Amino acid sequence: MEDGDEALVARYRRGDVAAFEALLDRHGRGVFRFLARFVGDDARAEDLAQDCWMRFIDAAPRWNPDGRFKVWIYAVARNLATDEARRASHRAHSPLDAPVRGRPVGEVVPSGARAPEDAAGDAELRPRLLRAIGALPDEQREVFLLREYEGIPFAEIAGITGAPLPTVKSRMRYALEALRRALQEVA
Image (cartoon, rainbow, N blue to C red; front, side):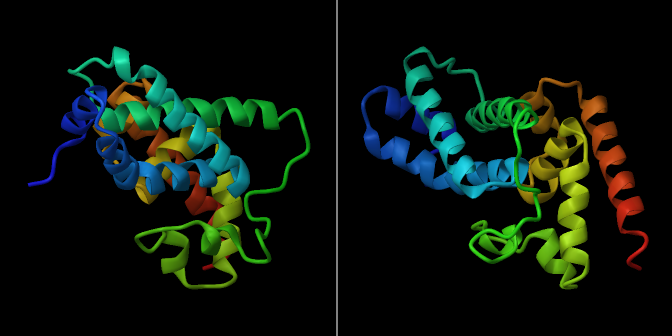
């Protein structure tokens, strides 16, 4: 039977490096995907993901055994992405739908599952969807990305963002309404 996240954290705190590697294997891609889609830059997302895992390493000795690791790691990623977004608003940056290595970001970001924009399948719709997601306010974009791309339940998103559950659900509703409006012209 596979250890749960919290058991892996406990093993890592006792010096078991394999437990850290298991956590990284389990959550590394999801954290990277969330960051890449939030900041729109693979290289920056890699740096932020590394910062996220370094923060865990630093915090592990003080880890609260009652805490949920997945909520904690995504909350750290969210905070790093939000800080990055604030910094990026003060400097020029590429739009979310800018090609990365000559391909749309949706094709470059690693994924174990098919992303919503891939499922759309429409070459005209995909860039519009990426632009529309990028245009969402940060609070709505993070809830949308965590729910739709990472499959995280609303209750855990509330823990990650520190927002009450009804607020998280309303942010998702507003995000979906905004995306629907932005994509209405395509239909």
